[in-house]
Image (cartoon, rainbow, N blue to C red; front, side, top):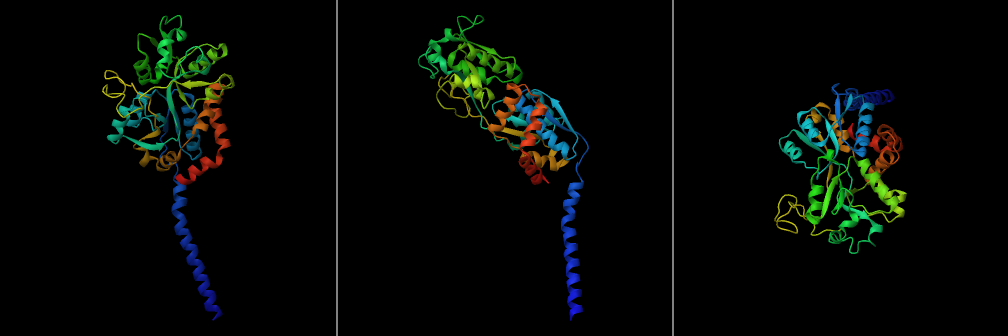
Length: 337
């Protein structure tokens, strides 16, 4: 009786061990198959620092998993063509306001696939220093800017006011369209900044001297929490109306006036990540990892403050974030595996 019990127990144990081996084998095989291809995963590096930091965070994680990673610098329009052709593998932080017709066309054709929302809550529009309200009664209403245009003028724009806008390299036009729909070419001149860092430096210079400045700007951005900016009341949004409705940027019949586009409050942009459609099959674990990739406004501010504010290298900031958020990104890897 005892011998039969021992035999049955041994058989049961052997079956359990064999079952465990069978169940665990696919997981071990999956882990051993990385990378699924030795071809390089080419990560798009766009021309603003926060995006560059996130691209290097993603690249470092992929390299830790054994993938071959390359970083490819590009402006937005060429990056869309690169994704569609498979010459680039994925792009982090794409704003829905960036002029994305080619992107969505490539999604519809199956060449580009959405990875998901990045997680940043983003706003943009005209802004001015709070301390200017004493000189321009009626702010923050946009109509006050028509009466105060000379306050915002510069030697290059007199007698018109001056608006500092997004860098030309961003290939964005809606910023100028929205500002000029309200303020008009007869009243203001739109001057594009040389770079994001250049915009921040000009804003800080204006605050340091308590001078007027009118900018088409955005949040989150590190300069909003800069000590000099905060201690002087910060930047405030110009209030426009009516609220945004779909098509306001294309259809003159929508918005405040029947002969203009973007004559409405700026929409709150979606911020998403996108991949070459072939990434899913060629590097499935890497694809799943990038589907997990999310950041929030605090992360975005941290990246911008460390790079643009403190002058640290993009790679160093990426390493700093990875060290401080190990449980977060290792959770992404676990989910992808």
